[in-house]
Length: 93
Image (cartoon, rainbow, N blue to C red; front, side, top):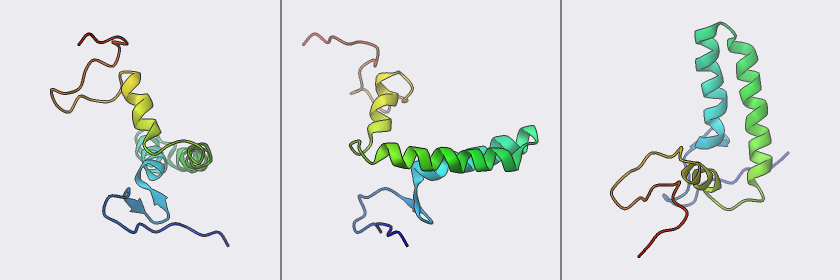
């Protein structure tokens, strides 16, 4: 039986059952999109499979690495005036 880390502080990511929120979104999105197009069960299992693959990949990466990648690829929405354009690689002071 494998062990799951329970959150000890309020700063830790939200958990749904034994998944973190970013891992649980893949099966949830699979069910939602599958319900719209009529393939709910296959897309749910595909989301579970991708979630376990994502969990394995995330083990060797720093926390919030996916958010970092999304920001640098221009996919993360701006949340204030302090964000610069993600596509600008050189910033003048």
